[in-house]
Length: 315
Image 1 (cartoon, rainbow, N blue to C red):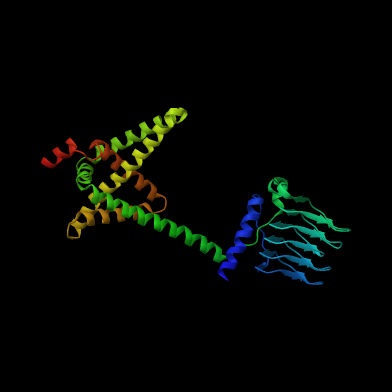
Image 2 (image 1 turned 45 degrees about the vertical axis):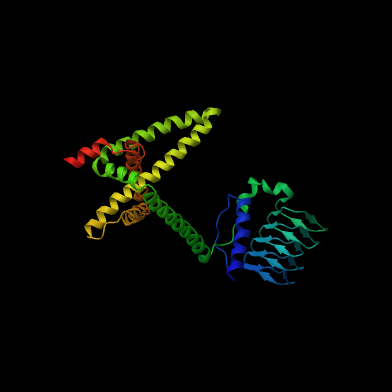
């Protein structure tokens, strides 16, 4: 059942892509048929949208649909009437003698009209169906279900969670792989955070100027890639150092055992959670990254102790 709903969503998304200017309308629950042919019997009346995925649609004479009809992965053979648009993707359309469409007929395949078949709107087939701005306002998507919205939200949340966990592990790994360098950068964040922030802002301003200049130069494109790589590495090292500093403060406050890996992990978790706060989270994460990058620059990637940090420790 879940897979069926997903297929319905995919078919409707394709229809929306073909007609980006659509407008929503209140409709009864749509008729959805998945993986099999669907026949609307003679004299049958459907007062809602109809979606058929992975099967053919057959409308017998005197059958009526008051709504939009969408067929994905199948053919449509129409001998009844449709008070709306007919959209077929991945199949052909045959309009028999008694067929009557009040809207448009759109198909990426062939459209065949027989005898007295009538279409009030436009008939667009083949590649022409991919470019139809003049009729985009006539196609309405089927109503979105709460289940579909929940699925999209769940996938987005899981993606953010996986990314956050990977970033957390990477930051902790940097702290373990380069302990002395991370210590030097963290000490600079602790003792000279204002200098670090200034250096971070200046570094970003320089890169903002240099990257567009090198991008315009063919020979400068490799340089741009190198600069972006260096900035990314500096940001990660800076985040690891800020995490070490913040974790040390938190563990000291709760009087827990001080271990470098624990300090980095706790600090990184707090920074990532703060970064997830709507609106202000991005600002906080940017400020932390600027301070971290600045400390990396001042310590030459943690290769030595910044003089301001050393003097601060002695005072």
